[in-house]
Length: 317
Length: 260
Image 1 (tube, one colour):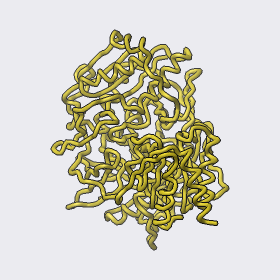
Image 2 (tube, chains in turn yellow, cyan; image 1 turned 90 degrees about the horizontal axis):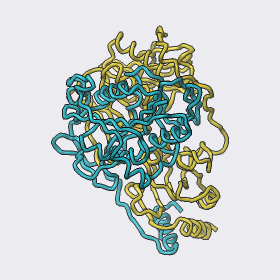
Image 3 (cartoon, each protein chain N blue to C red; image 1 turned 90 degrees about the vertical axis):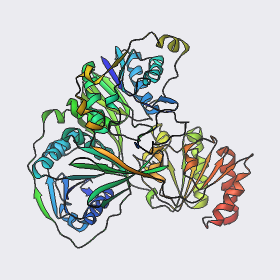
Image 4 (spheres, rainbow over the protein chains, first blue to last red; image 1 turned 180 degrees about the vertical axis):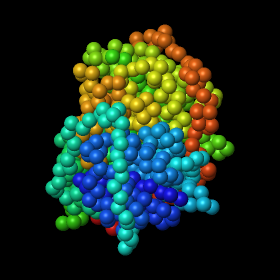
């Protein structure tokens, strides 16, 4: 196999999920090439994660994290160098790039893969479906094969490998540059990151109003944990983006995750399903979160959460 | 300004879903409804029309013939017209095949703005817009937390893993909205009564000029080999609270797991 791995960077740093995919690709065997966009300052380190060669595509049109100029570069590299497999760690940007590339190359794209393996020389992906109630073995009927890997599926594995770095020529079509970045997001730093917390208490729309985040904060404080939020309440301005857990927020895996008033939409589930123990309190007995929690409580969080906070405090004092 | 909203019929969220063990395709015989994520896209289109920015909202879909029943719900919400591509030869289409058909249908409508919802509730696919945009050579922005259209341009606040970007694209363009962008309206009684008499068109692949080899299984490049149950998560317990009495049970559970 001749594998190309799209390595996403943010502020020049290769993203952890991309390194995980690179490591997995190198264990599948074959010839693994990594592609990074931008100045390529991190390119030299990618050999440690299994790349034999690193291609760097740098151009002003590639500076902003927008998908379409990246598709032009990838389409040309795949056509000219004959990669038979192109792997992406899923992100908002990578998903758009992969799908557009599939259309451009008339190639098969399998998404949300939690594993990739070779079976009798054939590449097979594992994809959970129907709310993770079934796992499908998926494949491709032609090359190139494109795959989007679920966030957190593969851990980066560091080795002492080294890669050759090559700058590639970039040609971008005019229509690909019509969408322009006016203001690019900048992550606010400061405060403990929820990614490192052992205990997380999270609040969703079921809290009813922003002031009720106090209930979640009190319980988190009593348990010595951090506070997280769903996309719905972050977009509504109830709680800061830096606390958002989910597909477009943080992916967390604490020992304990307590979900208060969270329905468990797939967008949220993706960000917390790796938690050790999941406790959910929700008044809707049909909320999807009850299908993937360890302890589910159907009830009014406004009654239950303050009582639980008090009991935890008593036990700890 | 004409807005096309791409929508999909999916099995009803409350119905038990299964994959056909022979074909590995989703069993679509049960109750169906509009993909809830797509109603956010429709709501955004209707708001643009309510504000006077859009003059026509057309719903574009691909699916079995009876999917028109679901599209009528979109008409009841306020869409002006529905266009359904329905053809036996399109069944089993994967991403590339679906995008080839949908791009042809959208192209025929020549809209100024094409809207998508953030994912399909059945397949969890969240990529179709990018493939359609590429086929149409249109600029594309996804994960829109807000959308403004003025002066021939769409301005989108995009949420990514790193926060909110502000992106601008000239019309015509493709925008995929998030499910947090709005609360979709409920159809009014008048809307429901009026939906039946709104234009509803069903087209075949031949009507759109799509070659049979570009759609359905022939046009697809992916396949499913086998299905298996997921690895177990361990047993899960469910309690029904009565006046806050489960707080003690939660604490006991946490203590048992050495978490409190």
